[in-house]
Every structure is written in structure tokens, then in C-alpha cells.
Length: 191
Length: 191
DNA sequence: GTCTATACGAAGATAGAC
DNA sequence: GTCTATCTTCGTATAGAC
Image: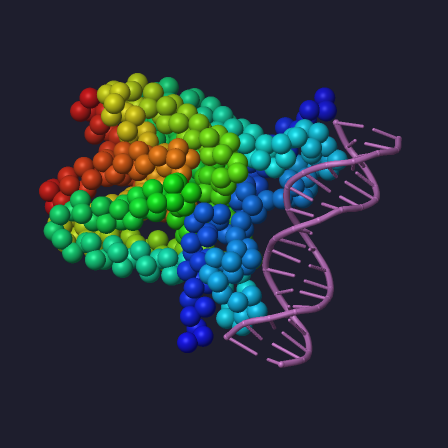
């Protein structure tokens, strides 16, 4: 199965973007990290680096979304927050605060000449919000409120991961989560 | 006053980082944007690109902090949020969602070989939080809560700017701000 | 302070053989 | 699908003249 190296490249790109960003990650790095052969980059990705990045964004988006979906089956509203936050906590701590969110990294460096990247990123953020909102809905938060809360959660947690990387400490994330959980519980009870 | 081109380089670096990130911005671009002479880069910045970036982060941090300070003199708690958010709204809209926060950009791409950059970024985030927390305190929010709320505001607004860039729309920021304002007002009244 | 020239490696991308 | 060779442009950084 020769398509194996293709998948590894996408995964490696997502991994490396988290640490060094889009411009900071070259094919050189992706090849080295994935162990994929140099000669087949443009065979697998005729669209070059932009295509690779687009797929990496989607891959990361899908991957995390599955985690959120699995964890938002409960009826406790706060568990929806935990589901989303838990992943980032792990990423931050395991990488010793060297890694963050690849989707944020790509968004922040996106050019005009590659609008596919912002579009892919927007789709990922939307998907995360939808899944979270569904979880909040199951926990009793009214639909309209759930959508706005989900958006706040995504924004605040993504922002908090950046603060954590700067501080090399999880506390910003923990502080933010404490506020979010309180807010979420109140919203569920009032619904 | 020959130091003028030095300042312009720092400002240009901050400006360009917002759009293309740290790795995506070369000296080439900084020279072109600032109009500064090529030959004096390493005269002004012996530490090279890292030093330039460090100063750009500090410059952006100080600049925005002055804006927050000026706007948090009132007694309305929500105005402290507006002060911070207003700036990012302007940056996003005027750039047609091409520009974000340079401090976030640098943090997200920071290497192990230049820990000065994360440190400078952390100092900036802390300063913004402190100024915001003081504003919230003046509006009647208890000190401990004010600190946590300020941190949430910084994280959520920074995260929202990323969402706005992906969507090419201000709505994520507006949605997040609506929630933050409500939360802030409640905290001020309960204090 | 600013210039030119230059070093040297890496970037993304393409062509054509196998 | 993978290889090697190659193109062109760009990256940061340095040296030494002016």
C-alpha cells in the first residue's frame, strides 16, 4: 500500500505546523519527520505545499472532532468543555509547550494567494463549534445560546493555548476553563 | 536623526508579522515596507531577526496597552472589554481580515533557540491582563475575579481574531464580545 | 550609518529517467 | 511511485569599503 507515505506526510505536516507554523515548516522537515520519500511529493500533492497544508488542516480538524464527539455524549454540560480542553492540555504538556494548534498556525500565516487555507480552517472551526454546541444542547442549553457559547469556548481555548505557550505553563488554560465551566453550568441550569 | 529608520523597521516588522507571521516575513519585506536602508540592518540589530522580532513584540505590546489604559478610566465594566476589542476590530476590518495579532504570530512560531521571543510575548500578555484587570477593578469587580476575567478576555479575544481571519468576518468577535460583556457586567454587580 | 558584494544554505517546484 | 538532477528565488548573515 503505497498510499501509506502520503498519509504519513499529512500527519507529519499537521504535527510540524503545530510547532513551527506553516512558513517555518519545509518539505525537508516533512520528509525527515514522516520518513516518506522525497521523490513523490509532487506525485501525491500536485498542488504543492498549499495542498499538503490544506489536507493537514482537515486531518487535524477531523481528528479532534472525533474526540469531542465521543466526549459530548454525557448530560453534564461541563464535560463538553472538558472534551475540547483535554486534548489541548495534553498537546501542550507533552510537547513542553512547544506545540499548539495547527489550524491556528495556518490561519495566522495565510496568504491571499492561497485562500483555500483560510477556508479549510474556517470549516474546521465551524465543525468544532457545531459538535460542541450539540453537546451543550444535550446538556440542556438552549440552541441559540449553545451556538454562541460553543464559539466562545473555541475562541477562548485556542487563545489560552497561545498564552500557555508564551508562559510555558498550563495555568492560563486552567484559569480560562474555570470561567468557561461556570458559565456553561449556569447556562444549562437556566435552560 | 538617523535612529528614525530603526524605529520604522520595528514598526514595519510588527505590521508585517500580523499578516505573514514571523517566518513568513523576511528582511527583504521589512526593508521594502519601512523604506529603511538595507545596509544598516545589522548595525541597528546585531542580534539579527530575533532581536528585531523581540522589539516588534514589545512595541506592539506597549502600543496597545496605552490604548487600553486610556479607555479603562471609566466606571463601566463593559468599557474595559470594548477598549481591548475595539482595536482588534479595526485591525481586522481595515486589513480585510489579512492582519491579526503580531504577538500571537510570534508565539505560535517560536523556536527553542530563541526563548526571548516567548518571554517577550508572555510579558506583553501579562501587561494587557494587568491593565484590563485594573479597569475591571475600578468598575467594581473584586480583585481576584478581575484577574481571572482579564485573562479570559485576552484569551477569548485573541482566539476570536483568529476565527475572524479564517471566516473573513467580524461575527466571531462580536459573538464572543457579547458573552464577555454580559459576564463582566454580572461580575461587577455582584462585587 | 549606509553601501556593495558575497557567502551559503534552504526554499518550492519541475523534468525526465527508471 | 520513487529517483536524481536541476532551476530560481529567497533566506539570514558577514566583510570590508566609504
